[in-house]
Image (cartoon, rainbow over all chains, first blue to last red; front, side, top):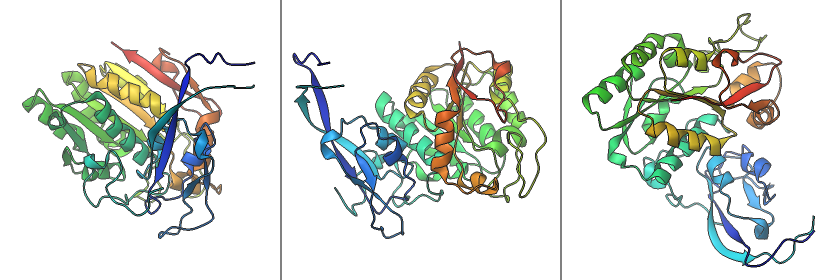
Length: 89
Length: 256
């Protein structure tokens, strides 16, 4: 199945992380709908694993990670809007 | 990726300087509720000079310390009393009360009933984590499950939305910390409601999971919320007990 692609655009977001605020709860990694984030192997200064951006091109700037974070450590901003060309299911 | 920079978050301007890191455990639901509440204030573009936040004791009582708007942190049981008095003297102010089990249903229940009887315009955000953390993990009136380590609870938990409806609340809703978007819409509606509004937020608690005898973290509690909740708007409030094997019913129950 192909999408109709006349003028349809998806937002593309950019993720910012303050890694020393993170406490490693993993909410953003588990509930990201586009599977953008992963927990890194390194530690921050408090000794927790902080999230890293795995697939930066998948982010659609939905803002769920920003709202779920209990420690104000992650947020996303709108980078650009790109046109949908072809989506296969 | 930005590293080690303070004060760059878009809503850092609403938090007091030096308040991060918060005192709460990793993954505590109170932080998520504060995040959602602050984002809602930013989104509805309310005049921040006309918002007042009151809170009581315990983990939830720290909310008033961290916000950079008009706040009062009250002693034990006096959070609703202080909020009602503030609202009656400043009728144009929106007053929001953050409460936990002790301030709301255990020993501060008479103030809540009196506020409902007076019909004061308040927004009560009740954060329900099923346990008294600071007083050595004792059971509360809302603990739904039998625990084995410290206390045994053989009673049914309190039905908070039913009590709120009988006391005269004009807006009653229940969500968990996983459903942040719906919680945001609920807070937006309740801020416009000219009456007593009660929102119960079920929150994951790290210590509750530890005392249950199982090893787990707050992310396991969030998975429990994801699998065991049902959304039913307008459900009669008699059916809203939280029991051991049943699904937790959420939604917007009363909206007058």
